[in-house]
Image 1 (cartoon, rainbow, N blue to C red):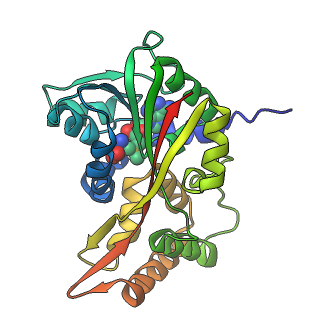
Image 2: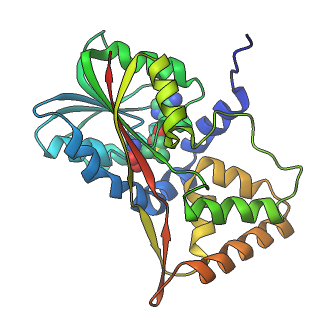
Length: 274
Ligand SMILES: C[S@@+](CC[C@H](N)C(=O)[O-])C[C@H]1O[C@@H](n2cnc3c(N)ncnc32)[C@H](O)[C@@H]1O
């Protein structure tokens, strides 16, 4: 069987997370929604645990775990994201590491957390195998991912606008399905193949409160490697048409007083190494 290597996707992700605009845009704009998953994540972690937070980014989850009494290490492959983490939370331990090749001994952690990270990794079976290796027997794995357009209003608006107004020659490199871990059956199958039992999967309400209808496309263009790629590769006329369509749909669907409330539900999985 041919194993996909997703080289173009790996390059897009590596470039994206080392880009000043994308890394800062994620921290200042996108993560307003990601941060809403933190209380649910923290509430699931067993007490007094030694925890690894992989794809830790700006250290939002790492810091919350440190503040609730856990011994925690944050790991991320992006020096730019780690610079944000170290500046924001100087007392927390952060290291540069790829999720597909973790620099830890077997059985080092009671728990591993990966919040909105695994969908950015090209070789997910390899990353899951590394997570299982560094976990103690029966260790806990907690992850979050974004629900897909079947349930997520924000992703419905964004993808449909790109489909309607994008230049058909602009395509994403092959990659694992970005939303697959939000699908119970797919998540169960991938995690079970990797040696985990899924204990619970729940939906979490995350959203952005936007100051203007135009802000949604800006978050995707400036705060996400895939969104940035998909918009910045468009000819200008298509780029403008997509943004206008996104803004129109935000106006129609997300009005909230003098602001716009844009929902992007997340999926939280708690699993255990078997
Ligand atoms: C969407 S951000 C999530 C940040 C943070 N965990 C949160 O919940 O907001 C994804 C993070 O995964 C990191 N990342 C992507 N691919 C990675 C890989 N192969 N190994 C380690 N980190 C990776 C990126 O650098 C980025 O910081």
